[in-house]
Amino acid sequence: MKKHLLFLMIPVILVSCDVRRSDRIADDSSLAMDQAMKDTTTAHAIDSVYDFGKVTEGEKVEYNFRFVNTGKKLLVIEKASASCGCTIAEKPEAPIFPGDTGFIKVVFNSFGHSGHNEKRITVLSNAIPAFPILILTGQVEAKTLTD
Image (cartoon, rainbow, N blue to C red; front, side):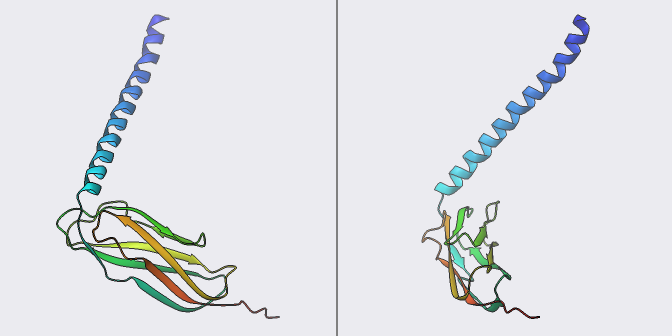
């Protein structure tokens, strides 16, 4: 009986050791990200305004705003948020190396909207000066019912 109990305890011990190691690795990577946020760099937004023209209500508009890390340190995008719940901004998860180009993907769902629309995306990063406000703009035309 004691042998069976011992064999059952070994996997539990191994798994718990692995969890602690994973936590330490996660803590180390968050420390590296914190340090990267303290090291400021510069960035240039290639696209800061995108006019999607005209779409019919209910269509989704997707666009990738481009930017370049023009500094000498890693560019870390901590957060990208939109002015409206109908717009989702996805930031790059990995830091952008000096000289590299990155993208912030924006998806606007035009359902329930009509007329002129302008959505603003705010980007929080370690760039100084701060990222410009990104703007997605265009015209949403009401959906027509056809028989």
